[in-house]
Length: 75
Image (cartoon, rainbow, N blue to C red; front, side):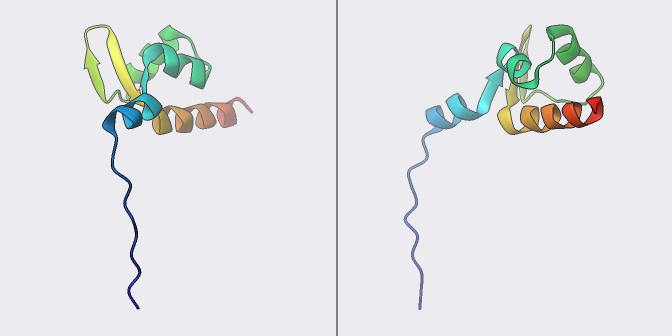
C-alpha cells in the first residue's frame, strides 16, 4: 500500500517571520546583552546567517539552543 502525503505550500515570508531573528530578538530570547551577543559572534559560539553592517540575522533554533546551553552552564 502506498501512503500519500499532502505537502503544504511553502510560504517563505511566514518561515522568515517565525524563524529568523534580529539581534534585538536574539538578545531577548537568549537573555543576554548586546555586548555579550557580539562576544559570542566574535568567538564563533553563535554564527549569524547573514551580517550586513551592524545588522545580524540569526536562526531561532540556534539561539534557543545557545540559550539552553548558557542556562545549563550557569547552574
